[in-house]
Length: 449
Image (cartoon, rainbow, N blue to C red; front, side):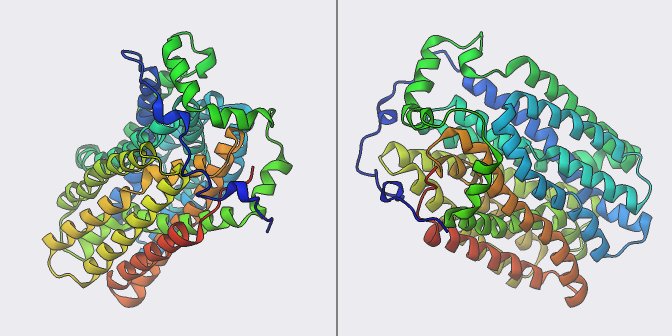
């Protein structure tokens, strides 16, 4: 591991008064929030496509006569390629730009989602989920870089939380909408309709997004506000202009900070993907709910999570506004949320009764989601140069989605082996505790790049 210069200690400038603390927001000029709005719309359609398979899983399992463990393999088929493709996706965003990469990704994931409606076998489902994972990988590195480009430090977590909250909206909408469409038309048509929504968001993205300095509709007062709030980051970036090389990107793996973020992300996202992939099945198999009722109840945790994402982002932004170092504000918020999530999962494992289980799982998603916006904003704060923001964010998310890839498989195997979900809930809680240690204790220094 490379050594760190003392200037990059996490708390080195906590006692300074950065310029971004004294900015005045421009009145009536909020194009930056419209940018976040279209990213949020893309994210909703993205997560409708991610979440609909878990809703349809019980029917598909019956149609294909497969076990819980095999369904875990199908569910994880999205996550493995997504995790791996995060690495080149982040580098590609830094090298070729946000607008192009996100447009290509949205078009591809919408096509793949539609084709899923024509799948009729296990192999076809696995292949299409692999393709979906590959096509969706650029979304969050591109969104992170867009937010980092368009927002000053004091608004960055709030902006990131806005489109991260959209993930919860998509997941909350997926169960009731998917259930309704399946009841009316069957699961093949449900996949086709869901996939078509992505093209609507893609058109909006192509019309609206440009870089701030090149946007014809950006008022000079808003541009001045954005630039002043990023001045320290801009000054640091001037020394390293140009496209990110593969050698520069690969050097990120030589720092301990990178690996703490990868491990923390692995454990944190394990919990999230337990919800995404197994919640509807848990409600049906462990708590005895019908398909329709499980579909409706599955939306509750994500509704709570959507609110919590915004709260968590605003909380850490408030810490920054009060002079706390942004890097410390983000990582400590994540650690605190992870501890509360672990407690919620452990109590759920020990609980009795369907209503209490739903309430506790909803609480667990709420506490987890306090970390969500900060999870991505942390990657922007972990480097001093904006040039590498998407690269660091994608490496961080690579670790997260390795955990997400393991979660459905481990859960399916544990449920089959032990005959229930209690051990699976305990494992998820333990993962949340490990992530708290990584972010709250181990992760102390920024990357010196």
